Length: 201
Image 1 (tube, rainbow, N blue to C red):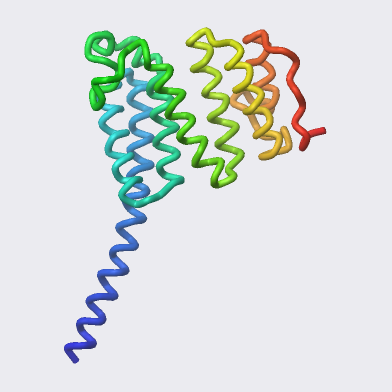
Image 2 (image 1 turned 90 degrees about the vertical axis):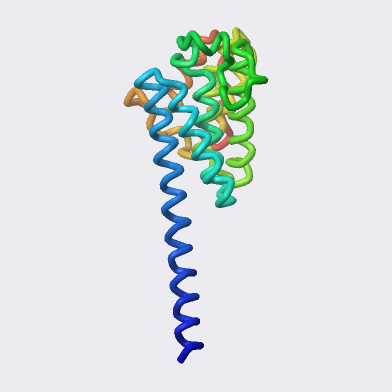
């Protein structure tokens, strides 16, 4: 009887452990959403940074690459955000309180680094949807740095990933196709005519 009770207790712990893992993965996503709201809508980068640190710790503890890729994508967005640029203390204390070595002038470079980390994970997962999205976001960071050639390369990379994901017909943020949205970005950046991805020819 005692053996049966011990087995049932162990099974209960294993089941609760699985539920806990699911809850913490969801909690990480909730924290990412909260962080984006803090710096994108409310202009409060310090609170955003705290949420992103917590989310990153959860994803690493879970060894969840999809979760971690989303955190790194959010960090990339954080470092190029207008809220961070407007935060006066970022110029004195630095844009990352958790890492004093990052200087305000380096925030876009750090944004690119986080985007590239997320891209490496998504490439391993062959997730062309998020690859297309992050390459587009990299273009914004490069634009802010006045690196127009790199911005155009990122737009082209986004276009190629979009062609693989939705054959160029994925919906964009303005109600049209994502390809059309990228065309607008390319024209604004004065990029050369885009090269059509093989999948959409």
